[in-house]
Amino acid sequence: MIVEGIKGRMKAGCAAIALAAVAVSLAWFDTPRASAQAIMRAPNLNIQPRIPTINPTIAPRVGANIAARPNLTTAPATQNVNPGTTRITRTRTNPNSTRLHARFSPNLYPVCETANGEAGECQGKSTASGGSTGGKSSKGKGKGKGPNSPALATISLSFPNELVAEIDGAMSQEQMRALAQRHGMVLVESENFPLIDATIGLFRITNGRPRDSARRDFAADASVRGVQLNWRYRLQSGRQLAEGDPAQYAVSKLKLPQAHRLANGMNVTIAVIDSGIDASHPELANTITDSFDALGSREGAHVHGTGIAGAIAAHGRLMGSAPEARIIAVRAFGSASGGAESSSYVIIKSLNYAVLHGAQIINMSFAGPKDILIERGIAATAARGVVLVAAAGNGGPKSPPLFPAANPNVIAVSGTDSQDRLFSASNRGVHIALAAPGTDIFLPAPDQKYQMTSGTSFSAAYVSGIVALLLERNPALKPNEVRAILTSTARDLGTPGKDELFGYGQADALAATTAATATPSVPVAAAPRRPGESTPTGNDVSVSREMRVPSAAMASDKSANSASNQPAAR
Picture 1 (spheres, rainbow, N blue to C red):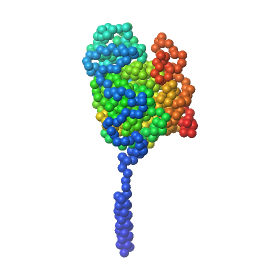
Picture 2 (picture 1 turned 120 degrees about the vertical axis):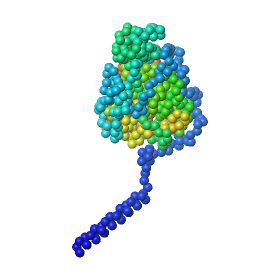
Picture 3 (picture 1 turned 45 degrees about the vertical axis):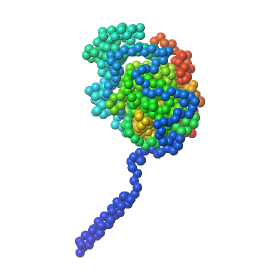
Picture 4 (picture 1 turned 30 degrees about the vertical axis):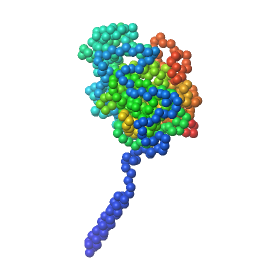
């Protein structure tokens, strides 16, 4: 009897548990569930004037100066060179001599233990396991895998069998070709760059000699001033999707609608050194005022370059950070498998063109190893009062500093998401100055399409546009003053004060534009100069394109006073 009673109670308990489970299941099925996509998406912004129905025949923007701008299409192979600024001499072994290699990783740049060594290659070698600049990956609440992907271990950091050399400027083309032939090479292309006051040639080794041996012998020639590898640079974009939520969380994060009541980037010129831009896109109507194809190619528009231009100057369905800015479209990155890439020689050519054709700001949404030639070009560009902005890079927490962002003359920008967390693939480091949205950004794409994309590339583009707002408001601002305004008005993220993830914090377009009327006093670091070059008397040249006297380069060190980053202090 006792046993039967126990069994009865056990059966009753089991039945009660089963009924409770069924009730919970029914209640769960009856409850509305939010999809992961809806959670991840930023809320829609109610910016009525900026979200009309897309119209391919969008009217020109309002403004006497803007309406008069020419609507140029992406440049063909013919180059736009001002005869009064520079004369370009070009020799090519074939029409596609500067066409770049087809290997490309859209997310990460490979990290190699010998990246800055004699060979500077990752070809056939495993990538470095360390090299972090000290930032902890957990700090940004977004953990990335870093650059140690086996698929990237065989990607070369430079172009095989190619050397870039500074040659005696008095030599003729025939003499340069004879010089190359004596050393078992051919002259691919040469040009005089007033920006760095040097004649640079691109050479290709043809006799099968090891590149390091050929480089040493070539450098010993009396007609050669210096030789380096032709380093490889990659655009810093992440995944692209065909469609996405048109809500632009970056617009509210950066306080762009409020800032645009003060300035829109009117009459400020930004050079975008990138891949091809679709100048016919409705978002970019009357925006591309000049174009230059540094590759000498006939490629069409590219998704990356078009997106960068959109982040800066979109003014149709979307809102860029400087919708009235003028853009010089410089194609320096050729299409490759899944993306685009460029080289040392092409980038110095692009910098030279941008400075000689009136750029006040240069956006560089690409990354690569430290490059002596590019460092020299950046120092000369900053000394002429041009503001330089670059993507921090998508190498992840274990990546060493990537260039040109790590150059002290450049404003390095890391990426954030809609929750103000660090973009998982964003680089870290003491060189980071600012952060800006770079995750799931909705931007224009070629052929009047749109894209959802991620990468520090787009974070840098937003900041370049904000700089244009500052220069419209106060054209006399110098690069070091622009940096000081941006960093002192940034909204602090992460550890209080400056840190290696967000720099001084997320850019605040409203606070920075408001503060642009008052010029802060900031110490200036002098740019490196060539032997015999005179030193200027002071940093007295504005960014309004007066190039008579070089100004000093902007300083990399700013005050770390965290109180200045707080809203009350601002």
